[in-house]
Image (cartoon, rainbow, N blue to C red; front, side, top):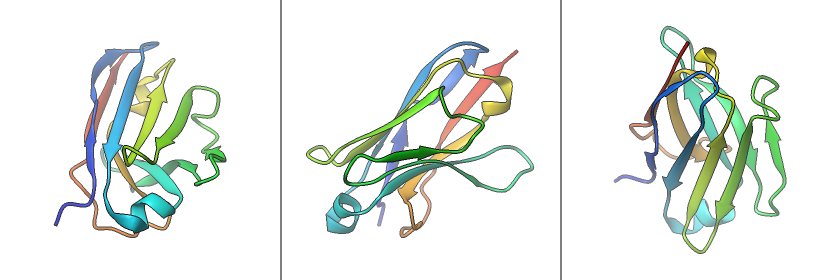
Length: 114
């Protein structure tokens, strides 16, 4: 059973922008804090950003001020707007609840060229 579907990744030059989207389903998704994570080649998956149901957000220091997380409970989506992208942002990006409730999806590849 697929719980989340990520989309919106691509290849951009440094300084460019991308917007990622993730569609979920079910009450757990709708009621939970949601998060984006990423996994760079050869590295462990890391947390990137979280948004609560009250729209409070938090970010890892390396993306704060450049990334914006948002959610639309009616559409059951969580979005990650990324600007001023850097080569070190290159990774596969995943969404999940903040507690990593569901099995991981396929993610969406973001590649930033220098």
